[in-house]
Amino acid sequence: MQADAKSPQLSWVLAVVAAAGWAGAFAVPGLWRILGVADFSQPFLDLHGSLAASDAAAQGLDPYTVNRLDLFGRPHLY
Image 1 (tube, rainbow, N blue to C red):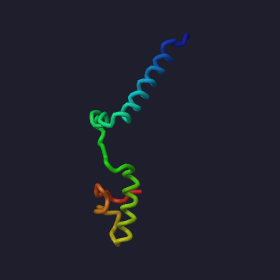
Image 2: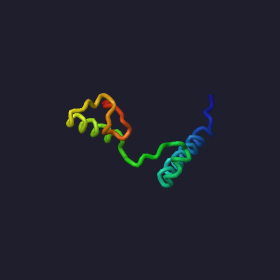
Image 3: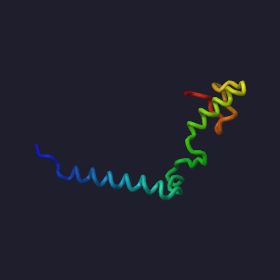
Image 4: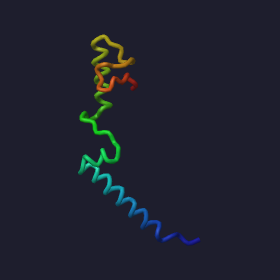
C-alpha cells in the first residue's frame, strides 16, 4: 500500500491556515465578534469568579448560591 503524498502537504496547509486565522483573531479584535465569540472587558473571568466567591464568603454570604459580587452572578463551582 502506497502512502498518499498529498496528505502531508494538506496537513501543513491546514496548519498554516489555522495558525494565520488564530493570529489574525488576536491582531484584529473585531474578528472575534464577527466569528460570534463574546468580547469580555474583564480578562480572566474564572479568576474573577473565584475572587468574588472569596469576597462573598468574607462578607458572610453564601458563594454557592447566586453570587451578587460576580460579574455574571455565577455561583462558586470550583
